[in-house]
Amino acid sequence: MRWQLTVRYNTSGLLLDVDEQGVAPIVAIVGPNGSGKTSLLQTICGAVQPESGVLSVDNRVFFDASQGVTLTRQDRGVGYVPQGSALFPHLTVIENLLLPWRGTREEGLVVALDYLKELGCAELFHAYPMTLSGGETQRVAMIRALMRQPRVLVLDEPMAAQDVLARKPLRDFFIHHRCRLDIPLFFVTHDARDVVASNAYVLVLNGGRVVERGPVNEVLERTITEFSKQFFERMKG
Amino acid sequence: MKSRFPTVLFAVPMILILALPLLALLMSSSPATLIEGVQHPLFWDALLLSLWTATVSMALVVLLGTPLSLWMSRRTTRLSRALQQLVLVPIVLPPAVVGIALLQAFTPTGWLGGVLMSIGVQVPFTPLAVVLAQTVISAPFYIQSATVGFRRVDPQYIVVAETLGLSKSETLRRVVVPLALPGLVSGAALAWARAMGEFGATLLFAGNLPGTTQTMPLAIYMALENNIRVSIALAVFLAAACVLVLGLAQWLIPLSQRQRGA
Image (cartoon, rainbow over all chains, first blue to last red; front, side, top):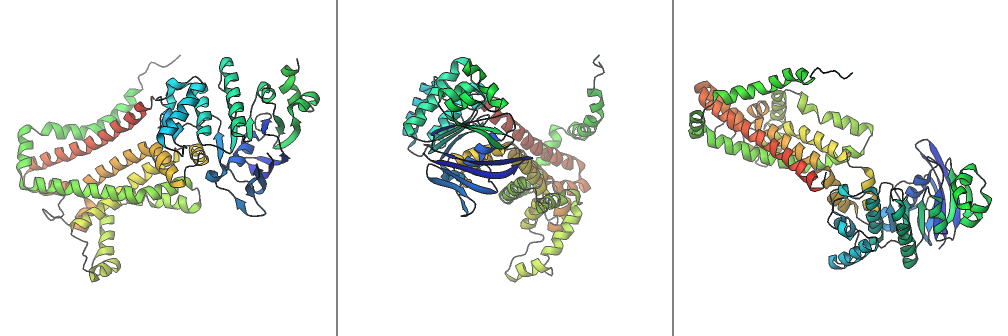
């Protein structure tokens, strides 16, 4: 599952300058606020276009400035859950879930209901997003990303609004489905437990650059920067 | 300590200025006046003409104004900013000026009118002229409201819709337009009401021909010369139609938001 993230572009005062590649299926992007984590995810899903570089995931080139290749957002096959989740407020939960579904409506309903049951929120079927809690919204947005039948998952703080009881089931949910679909996963988190539990490859960003990288066990051992020391502190204890 | 002075008192003078003419109109009319107005030969022709021309001009404004509003809402170039000012021009221009300008463009001796005349189409002093005058005068109201409506749609929704595989036209149809709907509906209602009330440009460009180009405001003007009671009756019906449509739009918008659980 080879990926390459080589991007360089200016985003509201921050120069994002990343040149990383690897084969790990799960990549956790961590770092202080304003370090460029969300911007990096946005380049993968095509929300923003870098000035130069190469973006490829699982042998598919999303962007290559030198070759003039730019895959549209539609063609990237990204299951994207942005911060705040962005459920469409004018559509009910089930309408949100069926929006990306490409099969028949009946099949879609069955699949969506299975996912909702799996996360214990089948009762939200006909609810409008404004009536959901932050945690419920994130769970529905996660299911919607899977309904797209993605070729890569890109999740921006997918568990920021989850309470302690909901956190682990949701984490298990997306790790399980990533494995089932056999697709790469890139996610941003502020919680070291997510990184350790998913056994992710870690990219520590600071000021738009990657300052530490490696499998979580190695990063946990050496923790070079002050940020990663504090980030992983609890896990060591 | 929080001031106990009721700030609403500052708002009262403006409310009075806005409400007084309407109240005076209502108070000076009676059921007998209204019946007399309805039975007047000017009434039905003018009402029907106003209703269909205002509806057609609103449809034109929505059809042609929506793509322009969408384009302006997404651009911050010098050209789009200049256009945003340009579309407001009919609001600040006296309607009589718009009427003369339209007449100059479409008169058979004018450059556009000459071309149309050569294919047998005469615009001035026809119902088509009424529609054109209403369209030009009312378009800015819709475009302004629709542009704001489109601008309020969080760009993140568009990114998410497209990553979910929706094409640009699907994203527009299923995400952007429904989210901008409050702006579009209130803009369309404003444009319709403004078209219903159009007077100056219509008079100069379309004339005041009963049954052909005489809309409600022109009929009010004409009736005023002979019988003020008929004029009042026509005015009450016109005001009621406009208030009704604006009220309907205001009722529809929160309805869609209530449905979402807001």
